[in-house]
Image 1 (spheres, helix red, strand yellow):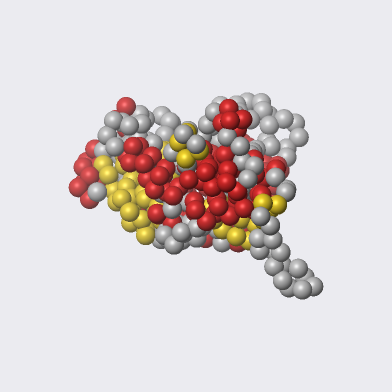
Image 2 (cartoon, rainbow, N blue to C red):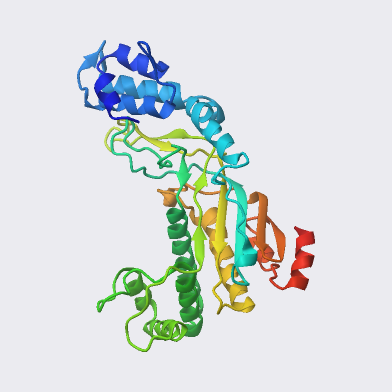
Length: 377
């Protein structure tokens, strides 16, 4: 949106708000729903009352009532005027393949490279924080910078999946106290997600320090594994990006969630706090690419994918992948649609999150086994 619109289109009265929401401002039409929402933002600066209503409250009510608050989230103004059109464009032939990423040409990549993809449905709303600093809602959900469609960024998937993998490794360590196993899983996580935060420099801190404190013996063994893997003779550990590549996920609807803090004394609600959200029932496509480098054997690749499948299942069914996930936000239904795991020699189906690890375990990379797998997919 051109910032000149803020200068030419005012938001100083109820009439201005009504015209902005309708998209007809004099002779000028503003068909883009996202631009109309942005033009409501200056009302946040208006404290005076318009016909006994505060200006910013009136603008927010219009934004809430006309743009999002409808019985069916799929048919809100934002969903029908923006998201549905973007989705149709990005799903059609000849586009960039963004809504549902296309399978790369695995025949040109290292032998054990693998592509995993499935369509999932949210069972609870998803919350996140957008980079937009000036918005009629103080808590907008994250949207793609170009298309303005609600999304989970690839970096967010990586961070949440890494956290889940680390958490599962720690739970296993606390249960079994096996130094070799803990060091091996920590090394595998580092190979998959890249070097640990805080292990650079002379002073170990952050995640690396936390994991060291779990088991100093496993920490020494882990670092020796890293040095042996990268042929490092000194104490400095290498920076590396890991084997996994993550794609963004776009969703087909958007909504609002309200949190209403209560006074302790009166037990009465205060002013509700509204969050833009991706509602339960929204559908997205999760895609992940495992790039095996030339030194990865089939046994190692299978162990890598088993760890990834474990983490995906727990992230989506148990821990969530959203802001406020400890309160139950950002979880998915167990059933998957159009799920598949693909290698250069075959394709295998993925049907549920709870059976993901078993289904991933069926993948093969040899020509003979791959031909059988291709028939199964």
